[in-house]
Image 1 (cartoon, rainbow, N blue to C red):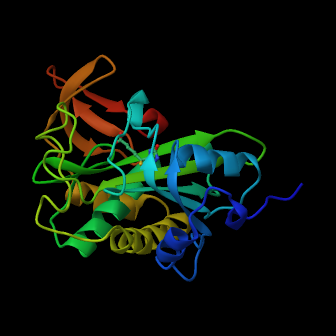
Image 2 (image 1 turned 30 degrees about the horizontal axis):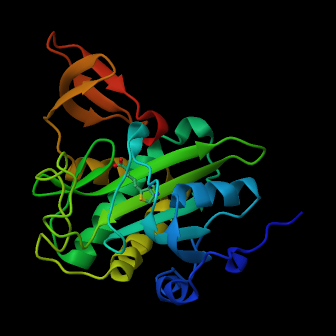
Length: 264
Ligand code: BTN
């Protein structure tokens, strides 16, 4: 049975959809449709359902609120209703799955570039794709592969747009910030439009030219030189490999590489 366009989604909010759909690029592979919801479990799960139903590349879900927002490495991603940009997109990249670890790096660059353009803040990246301003996390990215006859990748982005200083769980206070807290009161659709513009450009170039321009852009924004403890490995982050893996120098001087399995 052919995929039913998500315009027929019963839980979608037509007014919100209308607002956010104006953010879409007019050409390229990421043209939507973009469907907006007041509340979902997770926009990742919405897109995963669409992927399983045969939806094409470029469909997107955005939500005011997620009841079970998903972060990297099995963590939760929490935000009060209406405060964060919570967005996911279905990709069907015509590259083999062994190259999927390049996608979180690409997404990190596009989100950093989009937020910088929309909010006028200097944005840095911490491997694989934490998006930081003044050392505080303002956005996170989750890239999940979906196996199947036509494999898919779900790219999810959460940007802290409007949270107030007292709206963080205790473990995040001081480590995360919203754009509003950093003096940039930008509306969520403006942030999404800027991210989509950069993502569409980076993705199109990546599919034609490969990963090297993304790698270079990431290195220019990256917080290298930091201590990394990961999967039994400890050392200093020194570079990004040509495959998107982080190169870490151990205390004995040897180099090891760490792959961001499951988007991080
Ligand atoms: C991280 O842990 O840094 C990644 C967080 C990714 C959160 C976004 S919010 C929109 C999308 N839906 C989810 O459930 N997660 C991602």
